[in-house]
Length: 101
Image 1 (tube, rainbow, N blue to C red):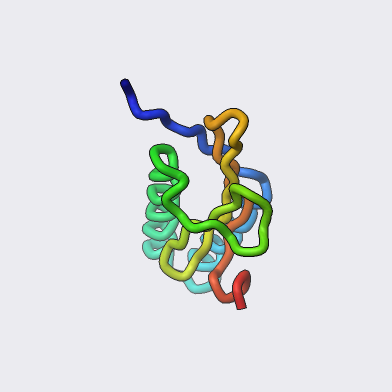
Image 2: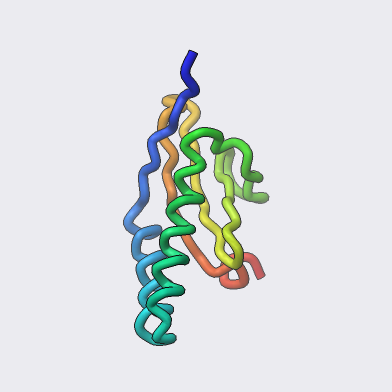
């Protein structure tokens, strides 16, 4: 039996946060190579959730199924839908200290 793959759905909020961070590194810090590598790494890590999204810890104090994926100094917040067990909603992306002080 094949392993179930979840579908990754990125919200507008997530996309905007990621774009802002990558643009800052690219244009303000003038580090285009670092920005490209960081963008690629983040997307690769997010797509590992297709196989096993439950491996990441739950976010304390949030409703059920809200989890966090830590990627170096960044945190990706996502939700798995129990009813469909097919979708992962990537809802937020932030520098770690901004979100969890």
